[in-house]
Length: 601
Image (tube, rainbow, N blue to C red):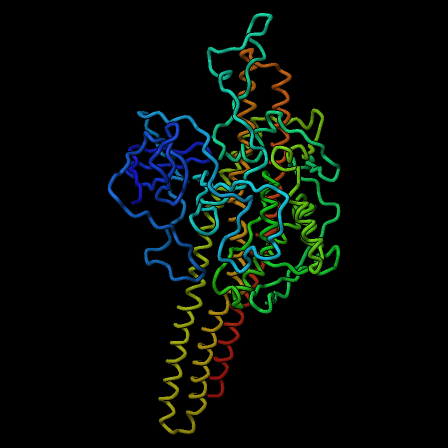
C-alpha cells in the first residue's frame, strides 16, 4: 500500500533537502513517521525531500505511487500538445505564497542513508564495475545522498527525475554540538562578570545541506586543519574582470578517437575502449567509460566550488550501435575539452593519472586510483588549498559579492530555461527534417516522375527532352529530401550536444552557490554577535576571512564559466551557420541543375 498525503497549504523550500508543495498537491510519503515535525516524500514533480508534517494530511486509502517521468530520446515523437517545460512555472515566476497558520518545524538531522559508496555509477551500463575494480579499497565508503534540494533548478539535471541527483558526502562528518549557547536568555558568563565571547555561530542541522556536506561549514567555523603542499595549492588571482583562477602554465588538449569494441574473459564480456592522445605527452592511452565515470566521481567529490562537467548519459541497450558510439564519443570530446580548459581540473593529480597511466600497467593504475581515493585535501581541508590575493586591494565587499552571486543565480536559471527550450525546438525541427520534410520533398519528386511517365506515352520525338527534364526534376526533389534527412547530423546535433553539456554545468551551480551563500550567512551571524557583545572581533574576522576564500573561489569559477561559454557558443554558432549555408547551397545547386535541363527542350 503506497502512503500518500495531500498538501493543505503552499510551502516553498528554503533549505537544501526540502521540497516545495502546492495546496491540494498529492505526494508519496517515504514513511508516515515524522521526525521532529518533518516528513520525507516525493512531490508531483518527482522531487524527493523534506516538508513540514503540519502542512499535509495523510491519505489513508491505498493508492499506487506516481510513475517517474521518462526521459525523451532525440528526434522522438513528441506529444501533439507541444512542449511542456520540466521546470514548474512557479520556479521562474512569482514565488509561491507561504501561508502563515502552521509553523514549519526546525531543520533536523536525518539518520544515515540506507546505502553507501562515495560515488555510485548507474546500473545496467556497459561499463559496470566488474573484475579489475574489485580490489580491496583502502578508503572507507561514504554515504551517498539523493538530493532534490534545489527546486528552482529541477530541469537542470540529466536523466530520470529532473532534480534527483546523487550528491557526494564528504569526510567532514562533524558533530552538531550544543545549541544552548545560541538560545536567547542563556548567555555564558566569564568569571569577570558580563556576557562576552560566549556566542558561537550556529550550525546547520540539516546534514543533507551542501554547505555541510562539502565541508564549507566546518572550514568557515575554523575547524579545518591540515598541511597543504605547494603542489596542492589552487591560486585565485585578480584579473581585469575580478577574481579568476590562475592560468595553467602548461596548457594542453586531448583528443578522443577510434572507439573500438574489445572483449575479455575469452569473449564473455564486451566493452568499448576510446583512444586518448594528450598533446603534452603524445602518448596514447585507452580508457573505458567506467574509467571516465570513476574520474568524474572523484573530481565531483573533491571540488565543491568547481563545476565538473557531466559525462554523457549511460545506456543499457544498444550500446554497441554505431550511432550511439559516435554520439558518446562526441560527448566525451566536449567533456575532455572542458576538463583540459579548466585551470584547476587540468592540473589535478587524478586527471593527470587518468591521462598518462599506461593502459597495460594495471598495477600502476590501481596505485594511482588508491592514491586519489585517499586524498586528504577533500571536504573542509579542500578549502585550505585555495590561495587568494592579499592586501587592501584584495578585500572583497560582501554586499557586492552577494549581489554578483545573486545576479549569476538569476542568469543560470534563465539560461537553463532557454537551453531546455532550444533543445526541444532543435530536436523537434530535426525530427521534422528526418521524417516530415524528407517525405514531403520525395512526394513532390514522385509526382514529377509520374507526370514524366505520363508524357512518355505520347511517343513524340520532340517531347523526349521535356520528359527527361521532368524526370530529373523529380530526382532532384528526391535528393533534396535526403539532404534534409542527413542535415541535422551536421548542424543541429552539435548544437544539442553543446546544450546538453551546459545543462550539466547549470545543474552544478546551485550547490556551488549554496556553499557560498552558507558562508555569507555565517559572516552575518558573527557580525550580529559582535554587535551584541557576545563574540570577539578577532574571531568574527577569522570567519569573514575564510568566507572571503570561498567567495574568491566562487567568483573565479563564475568567471571561468562565462569565458568558456562565450568561446563555445561563438564557435558552435559559427559552425551551425556555415553548415546551414552549405546545406542551402547544395539545395540551390541541385535545383539549378534541374533548371538547366529545360534549356534543351
